Image (cartoon, rainbow, N blue to C red):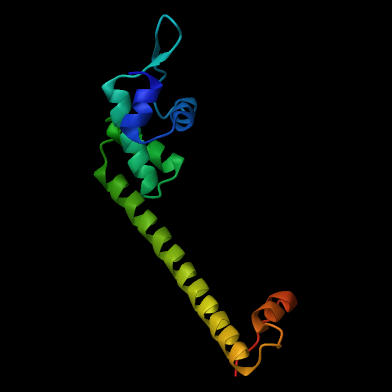
Length: 139
């Protein structure tokens, strides 16, 4: 298969496929007489695995570890389990961070609503807070 066909089949861009090749996540493809990259089904399967792992938030280094296990060089399912557990903790930390941002934004929205209810000519309390860098307590 040519790289364009592989891109279509995997949902990855041509640049991404070339990047994975450069990073040795996939082996170098064979070349046609004209110099075009030619990929086999194994390469497509591997690229799909890489793409799915990235969608789950795995880093390239973690994906390398998964590929070593996939290639049978290390048959430790426990290592995959540990990678997944670590990824879950990272996701939970991101969620906690996003919830904190959500609370701060909701508070800012309440301050805006209160300021608009009181007067249209008042300086926005959220902008004042952002300018000063100090959090104000809404009353």
